[in-house]
Length: 252
Image (cartoon, rainbow, N blue to C red; front, side, top):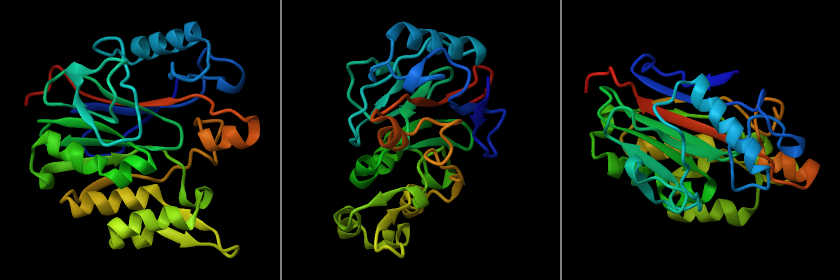
C-alpha cells in the first residue's frame, strides 16, 4: 500500500506520512482507503481501512480521530477521542500518535529537531485564518527555531478559486499574506494554502519548512479531494490521514 512520507531531515527519528487513496476497502464515491467515519461511507469498510493502516504501518495502537471543526484548538494526544472538538493534536511523548484527516485542506506536521515534541494540524482555510499554527506551536512550548515543519498534500493555488471576500479576510488580519493570492485572467482570485502556511510559520520563527508540492484536486486517483468530488459526484468523498509519532526507541 503506498504512502506519502514526509520529505524532511527527520526520517528515522519519527514516523511521518500521509495515507494515499488507492488500495482500500471503500467503494463508490469513497473508493479506496477512506479513513473518515464522519462521511457517509459504510462504517464497517472504514473500520477495515483503519485496521489495515494500523497493521501495515505497525502503529503503536489503533486510531481515534478528534472531531475537526475548522477552528484553532490543539489538544494533547492522550486526550483524543471522537467527542473532542479540535483541529490539531500534539505530544511530547514517545509512541503517541498525532493525526488529522484531510481532503483538500492542508495537513501540517511539526517536529522538534531532537524529537522533544510533535504536532499534527488541520490547516483548512478557516483554521489557518484563526491561527491554528500559532496555537500548535504554543502548545509545544519549544523554541520555534528548533522546529521543523512538513506541508502535506492539499489543493494547490491553480485549483483553489476563492472570492474577494475570502482574500480580504486574510489580508485584513495579516497584509503580509498578499503573495498567497493570485488574480487570473478571468478576474478570479486563487488562494495558495501552502504559501499562507509558509508565511505564517516563518513569522512565528519556523524556518525549516518542507513539502508543499502536491495538488489533491488535480490527482483524484492518488488523493481524496472534497472539491473535486463535489464538482464531479455531488459528494464530499473520503478522507486521508496524516500521522506523526516518535519511535519508542528514539532518545529524547
